[in-house]
Image: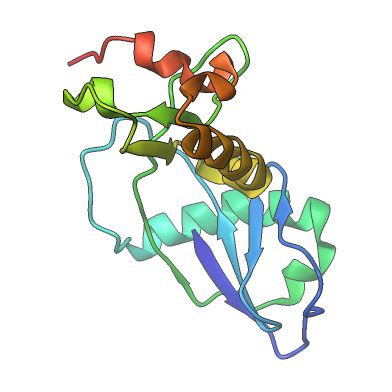
Length: 160
């Protein structure tokens, strides 16, 4: 992820953008742009070298410019790394993980522990739906209120 501040202001009511690169505007003068992928990396340090930052910026800037051309006039400030916990890939793509955790953690009473996770960058799109579906299920104590596409993760055995 790279941060770009700008003296020229981005409209306060303007949306963040999700495309080949995501642009998360943090006020009128700062935007975070992401993300790159480095599969199976063992590096958990959020700091990145100048070389890694340059590579990430070279990869992200053209993608971001395709949806927001003005980004090319912004100034690069810093890059940082993070780990994204991704949900399993299904026939419907990588969908959020929703559902009751009681069976997973060993509780057999009414559902008291619920999961809303695996949102990734698509969380910008799915967060409202995921919250609404989970809230209905929690209120009714009925996980079946959540479509099975979001709870199918429970049938997948963890690979180690």
